[in-house]
Length: 98
Image (tube, rainbow, N blue to C red):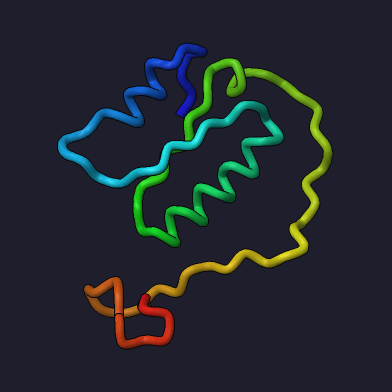
């Protein structure tokens, strides 16, 4: 979510909300770093089943930058396994607990 270059939106994402609930807020500082942060955000969200907010600013969102080509990762990303049918998301009797 791009915002201006001030910290007020970051503080709002961290501290706003009704009650105390777990959340992760990650910040992007350049275009190359954005890919790594998004990869980490999906991993954290699937692993801990919680919202992950990725914050950027308008300067990064509107800039043009030449970056090196994306190289596929050596290690494959382990994705979480979801139950395909039924209203329940989790099946604790399974091998993975999901």
